[in-house]
Amino acid sequence: MVKIFSDSTCDLSPELIQKYGITIIPLYVRLGNEEYKDGVNIHPEDLFKWSDAHGDTPKTAAPGVKDVEDLLDRSSEDEYVIFTISSSMSASYNSCRLAAEALGMDERVFVIDSQNLSTGIGLQVLKAAEMAAQGKSGAEIKKEIEALRSKVRASFVIDTLIYLYRGGRCSGMAAIIGSALKLHPRISVDGGAMHPEKKYRGKSDRFVMDYVKDMEEDLKKARCERVFITHSGCDPKIVEEVRAYLESLHHFTEILETRAGSVISSHCGPGTLGVLFIAGEEN
Image 1 (cartoon, rainbow, N blue to C red):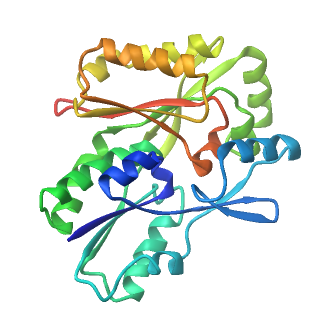
Image 2 (cartoon, rainbow, N blue to C red):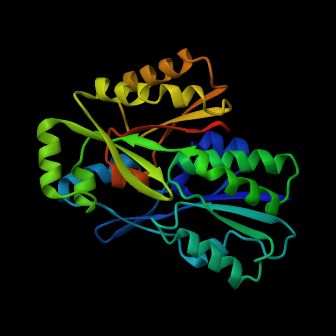
Image 3 (tube, rainbow, N blue to C red):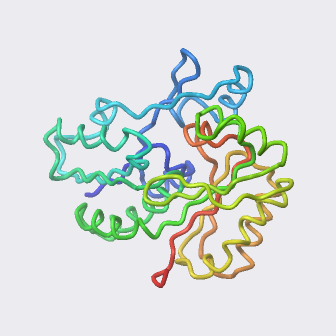
């Protein structure tokens, strides 16, 4: 049997985790001297309140090797496919790899560097779970996913630059100017790293839809199985408007909405929204 694991940055909903039988490996979130497990005993709203009260950003950390070892059953004959956030962003990949080595399970634990984050990972995880259900081996799943991952299109539009500034991901002057001019950058993931792209202006109900509509041609050419709307706490009316727009394309079989977990939210801040999908073969 092939079991599918992912670290908690995949941002899949509890319903999807249960439906596909996925095991989650939590990352850590530190608020001052207090440490929490992502998706277990902390909620994004908690860290937003703490960050605003302290003028600081939460710290995040990868799972330890022992955390991963405790989830692997050396006595079974199961194979494991484990997904992690991009190895350029976290030590999560290394922890999983070292855990498999420590247990002598290298031949049946397949660790995949997603080269992505959030539901850019989740898209790969669900595909792997479907392949496992079809009876494919861990090696077959890893080979196919690693061929697929460059086609994952993950991007987000940021409401506030304050959290990127607090986390050292943009300069103080950029944050001040961006806030004054109401600039909202689009951040895309490519090659395992985040890159700023176009900037949008205006209120959230305007810049979010501008961002989504800019992707229309790519969305129409995307693989039709599913598309994610993932956000860190947006106005439900805006999320529904995005959903209605995606439905109007008459292209996707599933339109899935998820909330970003505490690790992803600690870096992007509240009000961030992304539309994530897998590009079609011609792209």
